[in-house]
Image (cartoon, rainbow, N blue to C red; front, side, top):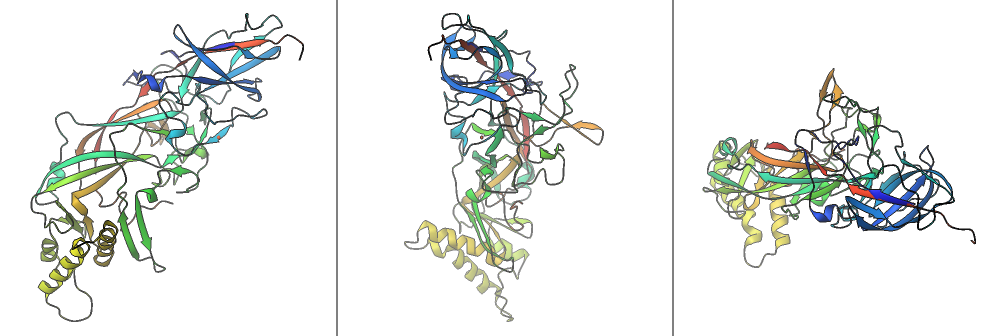
Length: 470
């Protein structure tokens, strides 16, 4: 048999576009170099899984002939399968696979793709019948092309064209004159995924009616290393002693770039069929992004680098002196003596700058700032760097809650989440995700008969929205 791989704007895929439309993306996101053809029975049981190369044809891609026994099959395709394996006896409707990073499924020219889902848990494979007449030169073909979705979701960000509104933030910190965004990174990329999308009920197909069913994703354990990559402890270190007191709060200073970022679809609380179930939006399980930004602070004391500033008791200060002026006992060593406040301030200033003197290395500086944070319960914004966390909310699909259709925190395959940073409502965190209180969370002689498969990648579905960081 031979298979043609295509997509259309009028598909029944749950990646059907909303009001933002679609985007073809770059060439590398649509390239198909190899396909794994899965021949299944009508219940989705895999009878055969074979890899085959593809060639370009008008309107899409086509597989070279695939050997198949005489019979009727329901065909699925995995494009660019890489190391992904499928075995005879697996079932498409429950097939769960695991990746370890975006490199496994979102590398240019090797984007992992699968037959689109039609919005239900029905198999939806393309029916094809192979007869004895279907040899290499006369392969069987499906009645219509097989449509593919990328398994990846794509996240991009821009800043408001006329500039990000930081008015609310400047009111919180005297001397704050500007905030520059330095990039973003993914947090809580899920490792486990279903090859075919799972839904709690059949999708509503009437034009203009919101989908009522819920995307189901594999069960996760709260903040478990086995379930996620780019976890919180990849960005920060928070330590506590046996009394639950902080002993360390460290910014690991990871890489924050312009993107785009890629992840697998995730609706961490939906395994019960209720995306609003208690715990469904735990920050250790919900996919999001961390924005890195740098503040310009004209009145900074510079003790923790240029533009550094501090937070204490929910308020922000450009200098340690300003902190003490508002809270005189902040640097008290609690020895029970009536100490001179000016001496306490000098001692604190010396503590914070100790690692920066002479030949102190970066690791010493990190430890000094961490020790200072936990000793005085002060947030130290080293070099004016701060972080904002934003969890992704799909804009095209809704779920029922209290009799209404509402958006929920989830990422879906083949969708672009275009985030526009619109305004900054508050000063961010001094380490990714914050601390105190921390936000730690909870995949041989008889003539051979053949078939061929044709594929074209569905366009990226856009899910753009403005983001007010707070």
